[in-house]
Length: 511
Image 1 (cartoon, one colour):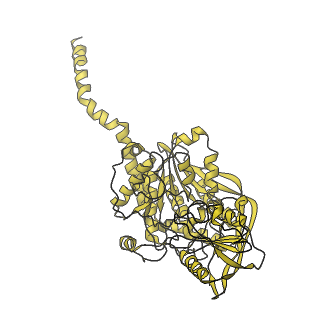
Image 2 (cartoon, rainbow, N blue to C red; image 1 turned 120 degrees about the vertical axis):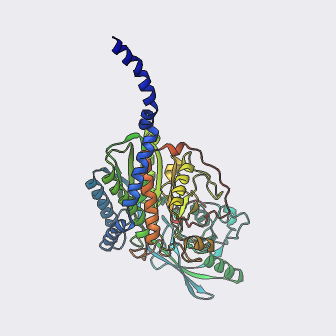
Image 3 (cartoon, rainbow, N blue to C red; image 1 turned 180 degrees about the horizontal axis):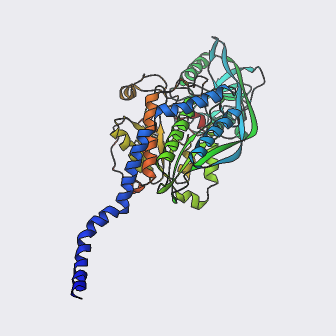
């Protein structure tokens, strides 16, 4: 009995002395942080641009054998989706297709030539869902919409003077309202076509938003060309030869969705990229790069972690180039519970631009440019990416949440969103050339939406940095979401906001 009593008296002392160490070993938050750090470090080490480049080569091979592109609704896209599906299935993911119908578009002609007073050819991009001219185009006079001081040129029917535009092609400056509204007002005034010119440097391609929105043949041109045409018109009549033709027909395409077999579904971590190209080219940077980088990290994750604490879901979106249709379809079909379960969405669209910038979506609107801050948690996602890039010595700057890529539907649904981007048709500034290297005064991707967006149109350094960002995020959030609850310190902007990031105007329906 004395022995038992002594043992009983000693037990509390032993438990008391062991308690701090035991608690230290088994603290869930600390354990999650350690697992996250371990996995993210391993994924960053294992996931490489060199290995991801093999996926780009496959996408190029597919495009070469299917008419030169991988647009949604085409054989090239279907083959790309099958390749991604098979790779993920083999790796052990639960993989599914999500089919949806959409209006397939393929531009068949886009031509703008000045006939008089001084003949010249002007590059023009047909707007998605535009009406078509007759085969061979039309010859007509140009008529300029007076530029409004408030930047809303062509947004009001009153901008089109009675009788001035009848039988003519309207020249309209971008800004203030949708492209659809501008061409609709021009059509109501009797115009037979619309040419919309940019209000910033770089080319202009866009969408009218929906097939039913198209009223007259409409295309986009550069600010420089539009300004020159307006100056010519101020001196006298300008006659043009104008042809815009676009095939439009209902087709079916699909998203590819893959998720880990284990992990808490109530804490779903989602990462996505669009898989389709435009019909003009193979789309190796836009967006083979994001798709390949995401696929590479997903495959490495399958090898490195069989039982993540949180469920990871990867998405390859279809018909993004037609207006974010794949991601919009996915979010629209989520239940209320499904939306709540997605704790974050990260988007990777164009991550290897040849004349790249390293842009991080501005989740907290600290740059004060354009759209407001993203949903609660977006600021933390931006901070986490910035901190990682700081650790690896990669310079970076913010870029606006404009809604022109697949984060858009998630932001609208209130889901914390973020991601990275390396620039499209926007022009690199001198300050950005000093920061990132490359050439000032030149587009981040001169082959944006062009035939030359091929396997040679990739910057491997940018590709590698962004793949590391994906790997770090996947590894971290697979085990630890605590950073999303940590407040973000407000850092005053230095004025270099990154607003020249050159986001996708092909998705732009609002100005």
